[in-house]
Amino acid sequence: MRASLLLLVLACCTGCAVVEGRPGAQTLSEVFAPPTPQEAARMALDLENPDNRFRGTMLLANAPWGGDPIYLEMYRDYVDDEVPNVRAAATRALGNHGGPEHVELILPNLDDPNELVRLEAAQALQRLHNPIAIPALIRHLDPDVEEDTDVRADCADALGQYAQAEVLQALISALDDRSLSVNHHALKSLRTLTGEDFGLNRAAWQRWFSQTDDPFRGQRQYTYPVFHRDKRWIEFIPFIPPPPNEEPRPPVGMPPVGSENR
Image (cartoon, rainbow, N blue to C red):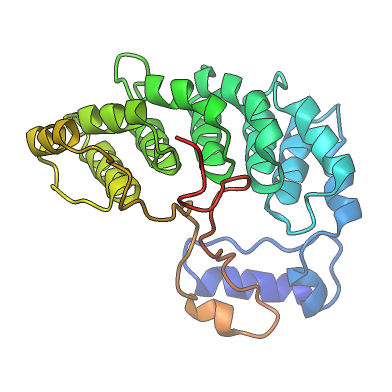
């Protein structure tokens, strides 16, 4: 009872933010403790309730212990689930915990009718390195193929790990995309791949590319985008979990810069 009252007070103090505690919690530490692996797995395996299946899979996707082989098998099964939210959660899970061998499972979801699934696929492909993803990522830079600007922007970012001429050409073309977000993600990848910076000037990039013998001489290490924010005031209270911040890292399976055959 006291735990429930505390939740109500915290919810009121944080305005519209909702603080969700664990069902049946009796103490403050129990209220804010994350679900156990067993609890998350039970929800994820609930074949009768799509909401539970989604929530459980998403909990495993975001958990540091979510890469256990038995969970990876479940993500493989759910990546083409009939429910879009479950497909999205499984796609995120493979991106967070999988390896290059899982890219072929993620690629079909880049063509999913659901925008959230496509977005999770593009972001998962930022975290896993496998050149088989290049054609699909380039195709989804085309506004006639991919209408969602966030998906196009994430595809432009993911291409920043592949030092290939066709990738540079596609990124240079994306500088003319009608979305400024896509322009800036394409420019970021061009800077990473080449070490050069001609801003959003497509003609200057094209001229440089046509005149250089080794466009990747100045290539820098690609790191995938991560979630990061400062603590909110409530997160300074004991037992309140901190924001789930991550450290930028190179994609799983990406060779060190300079060692990959081009």
